[in-house]
Amino acid sequence: MTTSLQDVYRLADFVDTFALGHYARVLSATDRRTGKPVAFKVLRPEHLSPDGDMRWEYRAFPSEADLLGRLAASPSIVKLIDCGYVESSDEAPRTGEIASFGTQVKAFGQAAAEHAQKGWRPYLALEDLPRANNLLYLMKPNQPGTRWRLPSEEGLALATQFAQFLQLAHAQKVVYLDHKLEHVYWDGSRLQIIDLNSSRLLTGQPDDANQYRADLRSLCVGILYPVFTGISAINGALRAQPSSMSEVEARYQNVAQLDFGVEPTLSPALQDLMQRGAAQGFDTAAEFATELQLVAALHGWDAPGADNTAARRQARDQMRAALKKIRQGQDSLRDARDLLRDAAILDEITPDLEDELRRLVKAVNQMLGNRVIP
Ligand SMILES: Nc1ncnc2c1ncn2[C@@H]1O[C@H](COP(=O)(O)OP(=O)(O)O)[C@@H](O)[C@H]1O
Ligand SMILES: [Mg+2]
Image 1 (cartoon, rainbow, N blue to C red):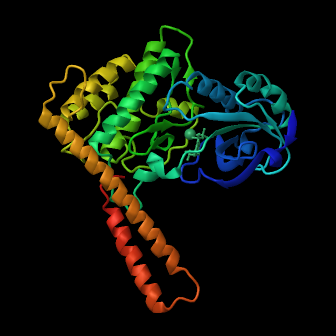
Image 2 (tube, rainbow, N blue to C red):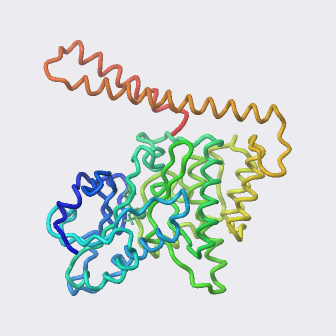
Image 3 (cartoon, rainbow, N blue to C red):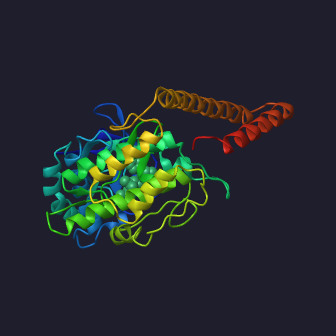
């Protein structure tokens, strides 16, 4: 069953450097069997134990594979393509053997202890998501004092998809728990979520109700608040938050009050919704989804029970068309900036050309620094 790693994967660079995780390193790779790109998530070597015991970081991999399988029906969860173990103990494994289990997550879990004994590390090959859609990457300002928020229309769409995801997860008794921007990918219309290794399968105890409420609080505090304000509810400035299991659970516990002072024009109904979530006021994801629809109706959405007028519908349609054009415009500006920047480093250009290219790069970057959408 084992083969040479190099025959199965061609591993390229680390893709996690802007938001390092506690458990894993993640590299971009090509699956040679299909020719398709994957994100190769492998246990950090420092979590191997010299006596071959499985630390909880090790166990998190079979658990994550299992949960990915349970939630695979959701369009919003990253797809698992393959899982297995690698022999190499290098941070970026490039040599040695691999044992690949495909999507046989049960067999992968059963083989964990045996591979831990040999000092092999678990990996997951996941659908490769573009860094340019990672919300932390997009929203983290490169200069102090700047911040970007999603337009309300897009934030409502993201919240709606997240609520649907949590409805499906909670129905499967899974709580997500690790709500933070670096785990969320957004392209303007589609939500994709990564990293279930801090997530948990509940056992049907009376205490489960608290877990579901806390999961909804974490959505409001850890994702929606920064999405609609551009700042973090705990740190102010947005930054990566690598964390272990206990830190994940404690992260948003003390944020019962959200401050919307930086974003005074944000829809009061939306503020109330997030505030209610922060105070653990939603028992179920369905209840949250229903309240969210009422808020969306105020923004021109055709929610059940909304008394939408033709004018409101038209205003929303025009806003959506405009947002699409703004995104296209920003993409064009980035393309232009890249062309200019690449030209500026060509050999043997005159100083006259180089200075002008650099002036334009700077000016376009200033425009991008004032962009409308993160
Ligand atoms: N499927 C993916 N596609 C692209 N990048 C990913 C993918 N999964 C993870 N990453 C990158 O790697 C980082 C760490 O991954 P994560 O799953 O959060 O690991 P950990 O379990 O250690 O927290 C993420 O913040 C993200 O930048
Ligand atoms: Mg993570």
